[in-house]
Amino acid sequence: MDFSLTAKQQELIGLAKEISEKEIAPRALDIDKSGVMDEDLLNILKQSGMTTLAVPAEYGGPGLDLLTVALVTEEIAKGCAGVATVCAANSLASFPVVVAGSEEQKKEYFDCLNKGGMACFALTEPGAGSDAGAVACKAKKVEGGYLLNGTKCFITNAPIADKITLFANTREFGGIRGLTVFMVDRNTPGVTIGKEEDKMGIRASATSEIILDDCFVPATALVGRNGMGFRIAMETLEKARPIVGAISVGIAQAALEHAIHYAHQRKQFGQKIASFEMVQEMIADMVMKTEAARALVYKACWLEMNNDKQASLYSSMSKCYASDVAMEVTTTAVQVMGGNGYSRENPNEKYMRDAKIMQIYEGTNQVQRLVIANAALY
Ligand SMILES: Cc1cc2nc3c(=O)[nH]c(=O)nc-3n(C[C@H](O)[C@H](O)[C@H](O)COP(=O)(O)OP(=O)(O)OC[C@H]3O[C@@H](n4cnc5c(N)ncnc54)[C@H](O)[C@@H]3O)c2cc1C
Image 1 (cartoon, rainbow, N blue to C red):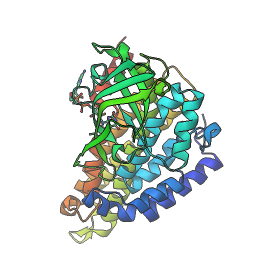
Image 2: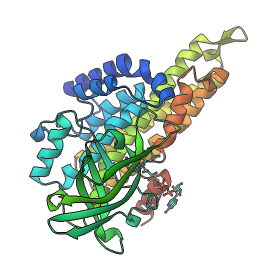
Image 3: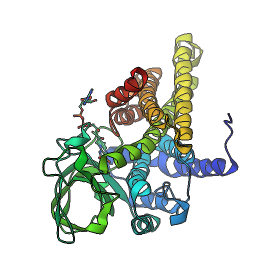
Image 4: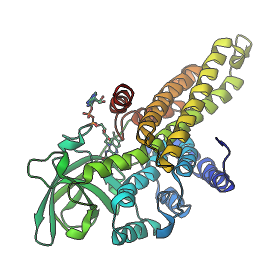
């Protein structure tokens, strides 16, 4: 067992940390208020390679392993979890192409991302959240390709995406065995980006509906095989969930550091609150839990990189545990700061709102616990 990081990993962490501290964190509260990430920051993310973290080396990307993607993501998330979500959504949308795309599809998709393109992963629908088998978006076979009809909702990056990794059902009566993945260009006739969500947190990331109205895609847009969509979704989420864990660790770490700084400044009863044992207990628990979550995220990445048969289980555990820790640590960080923690002048209340979504997207923590309990019991 070796916990040391390679020189390359340290270099990339340094780059991400610099961007996070100089470019992201100073704008995070303003972006949170307006709900709009400025074009300038998005360009910085693109130019520094933060939107192409999952692109393999043979297709012009950095060819990073999952642990390195997690390390970089944690640093970005310390600056702003919404910004980290924008970058992570590009990876999430890329994984189905990595897993099952043809040579031509990989070239086209990754070429687009390498040139600054953005992508989104469109699985969720108004009637299909935790139950992916309920996807009602239809893909009807027609001459030369498929006709797509339906509505996707809560899709991260949809308003800024050039490529949509879309899940539709090729079977008339739906069900998991008809779920199929398509690579859809945003400007294909019949694709409309719907209303943008006004969200509680991660407000730097744009989330919206995608409406498909008789949208024709050629047969070459089908990724993998007809009916392979559920398997591709599961393999994708197996890779992506530790990244949600990494964002969660970044949020928790940022909240912890802010609480520690405050505890050294704030005086009550003639002494710094850092000297009170009950405040120290809160800090100690935050430190331990954040570190335990980080270790679980690293292990999940390592198992995934080594194609271990427990990778899927650890992927679920890392996402579930780290996001629960992020929620707990950010709530405690507000408590350490008392009334000031509750004010929008300080970032801890933002961290708390940002942490909440980590327990919901990419499979709720109830769904992760189903996976974990099934693995433990049967
Ligand atoms: C900000 C944001 C960004 C998102 N980004 C994307 C994206 O980029 N792409 C995408 O495809 N989706 C995205 N989503 C959708 C997200 O993945 C879903 O919201 C999530 O999977 C839960 O689905 P749901 O909201 O329909 O909740 P539901 O499935 O309706 O769940 C409601 C409640 O019931 C519980 N529940 C459901 N089924 C079970 C069960 N079998 N056992 C126990 N409890 C259960 C859930 O845990 C939850 O507490 C995003 C959502 C948000 C809010």
